[in-house]
Amino acid sequence: MSHLLTLAGGKANLVFHDVSDTTRSSYAVPVEQLLDSAEQLRLAGLSKSVRFYFDDGYTSARTASELLRERYPEVEVVAALTITAIGETGYLNWGDIEEMRSWGVQIAGHGYQHVRLAAYRDGVARQTPPDGIYRATPTVTDEAQLSANEVLFQLAETRDALHGLARSEFVLPYGAYNRDVVSINERHQLFSVLSTADCGWDLGGELRPRLLVTRNLSPRDIPHLLASPWPKPPKA
Image 1 (cartoon, rainbow, N blue to C red):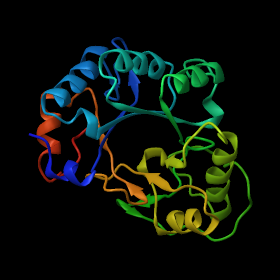
Image 2: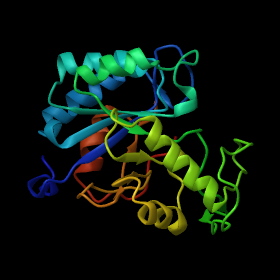
Image 3: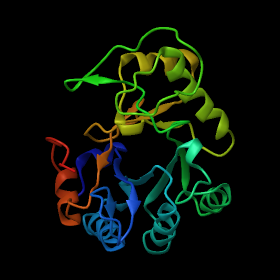
Image 4: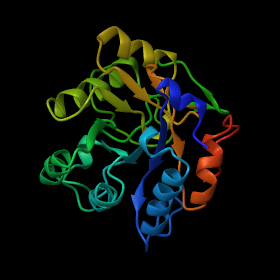
């Protein structure tokens, strides 16, 4: 059932957050669901054509990565890290990150702070205000609207903090971006890839689509989603 796009080197990118049997958030999937997702992809012949992302840098990413390394070593694993969260309670520390890298886990940036780089109104991305102060955003809220220089801060300071540890990939917090964010990244030549929450197969473009996996998405449905044009992302 392998998707024809795998023949062209296409990749499917699956996004997980916390992996926990006890946390009740829809974004926290049980360990069994994670492993069953990998098994269903193996049975569908897609294991070598998927990446498993663990966003936000929860400590569970370490355990999940180790389990995948042992049972499904062909699956590429990426840990997306928010700089200010590293070492905080419940999040990976620098020692964890180094050990995961030794297993072959790829590291990507996920913001200096976990803040949207673009604001939205009625589901439409708003234009980024020009200029502004080069600084960390003082307010990390859903309503925060970053200026161009605050967007640049998030991108540049993430790159610098992970220098020598991470590949050239920035995972957009909440998948939020607009044309201005893409332009700022290109103008300053910061990251080769911006990973989104858009649907679709990854054919090597600058904007990398990814499929969000929640507690409510059955592992058996994932290969079927990947084998068809993705209509709409599943509800959280």
